[in-house]
Amino acid sequence: MNSTDFPAPDRGLLVTHFLTVSDVSRSRAFYADIFNGRVVLEENPCIVKVANSWIIMNPGGGPTPDKPDIVLRPPEPTDAVSAFLNVRVADIAAFYSDARSKGAEFLTEPLDRKAEIRCYLRDPDGYLIEIGQATGILEGIFADR
Image (cartoon, rainbow, N blue to C red; front, side):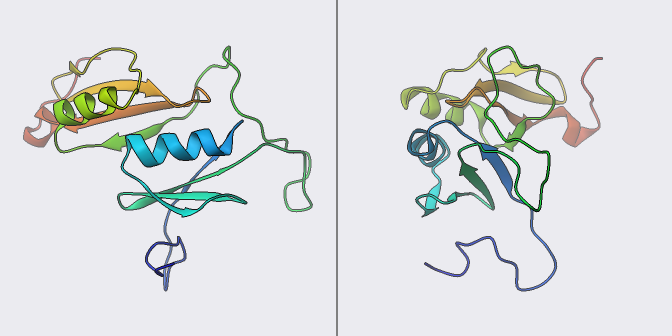
């Protein structure tokens, strides 16, 4: 493994995103395929490098000494969304077309929101992922509220 593949900074910090998943191999394949990610570790935990960040995935479980009273589980279909992955792309039309050809299911096609063009998809466990391309915001144009 190349040291730049693993999320371990030489100095300062870096941010990764951890997902509790129901099927590690299915989620690993999704993030590697849809986002052209590089699998760094297969599991325990699974780590997929996506562009300049990492998605870390493991199955759920009960409390541990360092997180007492915390239970990790994938989202339920009825769960309200309180956080989501935000992926910025240079060409949303190309990303959308490529991801759909690989089986990604989007909630809508990309919509122009003035500040950006964006759309959403869900991963195999139902995690929401926003795909966005900055447009008007680069010129000081913001989305309507």
